[in-house]
Image (cartoon, rainbow, N blue to C red; front, side, top):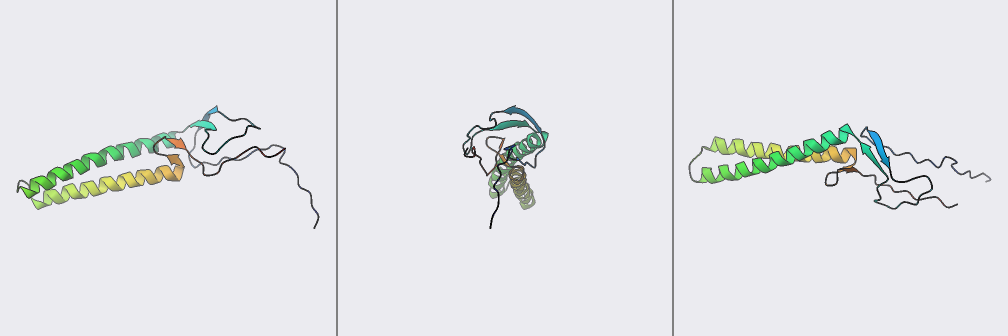
Length: 130
């Protein structure tokens, strides 16, 4: 077989994200060598901000629900509340845990690290050889 290998003159690499937003800072330029994990650009995204906010609220609600469940278990053991009240506290705690899991999954679908609140792509790029 014969053929021709042509370089990509634009040397453009598409960056695809499920989160919409606006690029507010570019930290890498055409021809720069980059490494895995290096911050390439910053994007201001209402989608990401909303998802992070929802996740943080869900985590706070989960902590509160778990505390209330522990309290309800103690009160039930001492006969201070009815079993139905303990069941309500247990259901609330279960729902709060599910909300945290859903929030985390939403962030993962958007490609966001929940700890750093940054978009993460699994592929990294380096300058092609000259």
